[in-house]
Amino acid sequence: MNKLHTLQQAASLIESGTKAIIAGPEALLTQLPKGDWIGGTIPYFMDDEGGLKTEDRVFVSALPASVTAISTRLYDERELAAIAADEAENGFSYLIVPALTTVHESFAKNVYAYDGIFNRPLLGWIAGVAVEDIGKAVPKVIDGRTGAVSSDRAVALHATLAAGHQAEIGIVNLFGQGDGATVEFDDTGFNVSHARVNGQKVNFAQWLGENAIDTRLPLVADYCGAMVNVSFASVDAQNGRVQLYAPVFPGVTYRIAAPVADYPKSFAAAIEPLDIEPALSLNCILNYLYGKLEGQHTGHFKGPFTFGEIAYGLLNQTLVHLQIHKL
Image (cartoon, rainbow, N blue to C red):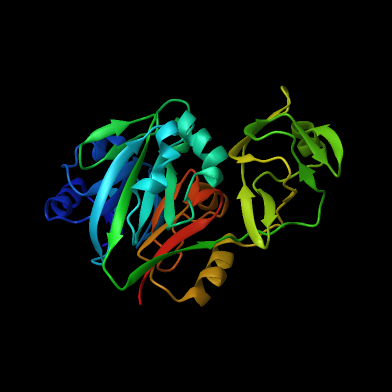
């Protein structure tokens, strides 16, 4: 059932009582009936037919039967800090955040300080629009239970699992640190001007250009063996500014990622050993674009390509999935 559907098919699923996460264009999402779902805007998907962009269907990620109850809520940046208090005792939470908003920035910078944030699985994504419409159209999220649409608040679905079941988040990250220069930053943020490269303060945009850095490769930090990517949104050499898709943090050492020779083959090689069929899955829009995943497949991992991935915190260029285990 985790696949693209026409508006009519998706509406029928909702009316039948299906609990779901729904991704698609605003024009379709706002026509769906109220029900047990949340949604966000995005036009890129991994479906049975492969990676594609479409504006005439929505992707329905149906929650499994082990989800016995849900609650939904919209959060502003202040309220989101207390999201753990709304989580089910045994379950998981799914969060969708509109891109380029104060709630997006606040979540990305502060999530690891949220009280109880690691108590239960939290996954989700950053809503966006077609790449060519960035700056023209506004990302939105929808609380399907109330029909409320928001461009400046996040929406969450808190799922309760049946007794004897447990949720687990997994990630697939193709990138590791390269062997180049160390990069550090003095301030937290998405927009940076200066960095300390091998300890020397430089204009970061200028350094990237002078060293012909391939900005399709993210910055990668090694958090005790866990590789966390920060992807480049744009480099403004004229004004000396670099815009990122996630914030960098002081006290963290980054390096430019080691190159990935063949995206589709690398994804296949990373996914094949997992041999799982996840309950929910999402991937990064940059993997879709840079990896030329249109028409390609990523096994059982189907869902939206998003403008940022959430696995507790904000990730970039990463596939995130959820499994439900029967204990």
